[in-house]
Amino acid sequence: QKEVEQDPGPLSVPEGAIVSLNCTYSNSAFQYFMWYRQYSRKGPELLMYTYSSGNKEDGRFTAQVDKSSKYISLFIRDSQPSDSATYLCAMTRSTSGTYKYIFGTGTRLKVLA
Amino acid sequence: DTEVTQTPKHLVMGMTNKKSLKCEQHMGHRAMYWYKQKAKKPPELMFVYSYEKLSINESVPSRFSPECPNSSLLNLHLHALQPEDSALYLCASSQRSGMNTEAFFGQGTRLTVV
Image 1: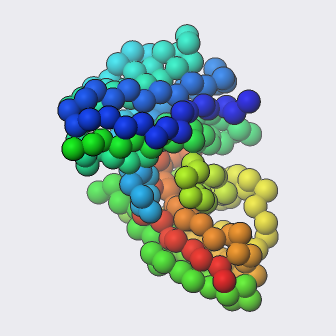
Image 2 (image 1 turned 120 degrees about the horizontal axis):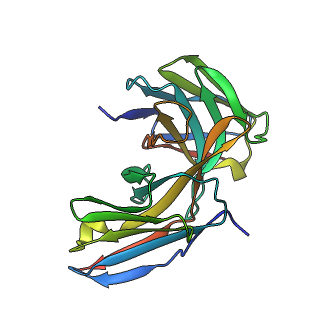
């Protein structure tokens, strides 16, 4: 079983829709959670980060963490064609005293005009 | 400034060549990372440097040799690579190697081994 599970998609939605992207994890040692957006052939771009359970909002993006269920979500409101990309969740845990970022497989999102 | 700069953007090398990838950040970050990413896969961690010291090597073959000359620079020296090493190589940095700290990525070097 992978430490972090994420549906690879693709997920296709019409422009203006609310998008929900999700990751589950198995290790309660994960404490810090991030969402990255990656366009084709580019490096990942940090969108959101949070460490506490609950919601964090930034513009059209809301990150949600439920540590009791080991479940995190990213919501995109009023989705645009420019949001079409792969969305990666990432989380940190300690290994031998150093922290590693563990990524989900990424969800490919297509927003149709 | 949240920029991590990687050079070159593209690299084609033969299996007998020696080349280097470079990464630079001026955010004062003290942790730097190399990742390898194949198409439609997530980034895979290769190396972590914390305060210019190698702290994690994810059992990477010795044909990949990292170097951290100072707190702003990270190199990846390549020698005798195989075609299956072709991938996007990503550098990242974070304020420190710690739990509550986010990583910033460069745009990557797209490496093709022929």
